[in-house]
Picture: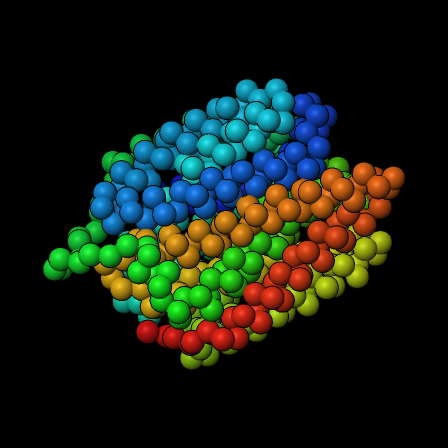
Length: 389
């Protein structure tokens, strides 16, 4: 229960910058590319921590790993954010928060991998992801209301306190699963030597990036610059996309067993996500409900993360369960971080070319970038081996 609440915080922290984009621009001069860099720092530190977190889960256990990092990184980073006076401070805070959030979902996945049959992993992973994604909803209209009532500094200070309390709760209530029987040796290098994983890694790298990056940041500047939406109105749009992402997560969860395949479920869903990205590009200048609807579809069909995780997890030996799920998560979250840095650069360069703020050109470039890499990931994934073990 406490790990699920901690994952609510993790989902919140990766998505709330979209709602704060306008107010941070006014108060501390943070431009969209500054916030893209800060968002990228969250995903970068989160991804960089996956291999050490995997080692810690296998050797120290999820209780200490999750509680200590959430206390130091999550609570400490939120406190730094609350005191920010420049865009660089926001980036530092997001880097720390990413470290704090890094072990939360993987601690739960580690427990699932160690205590439940592999065939149930996708469903359990999807339920955890779906319930935790309430944080995605909280990081929309409710956050906009909180900022109006308490200011963004007060909101972040409150989140620092909540993070500390949840970390203490994890330390006091979570039980570590037993160790696998027998003496097993191995490392993440053993996983990287498995050819079956290398057809899965590329799609893992790009599948979550469009929905994660759009919901985490770009939906806010896009709707503000191109359509002139206010912070509360952006909050409503992010609420719609967040709800679609949660619905997609629950939809994907049991379908691998219903359809008898993971590979073709994942591929079909991501092809539909490509179609929605193409629709978003074509929707530039259309009534605002249309691009919001396309973003919602991207969020729904782009929610294949837990099923891709289960596909790769099926090939991981039990004694490497912690390092297996965190290696897959490194690709999934690291891809968003890399693409946030790249799209921040795309926006900065295209916006500097004597364009009006309402010109959708920089955003069309960003959406096309996501589409190209998702198509490439799907093409490589065609070579993967199906599994429902």
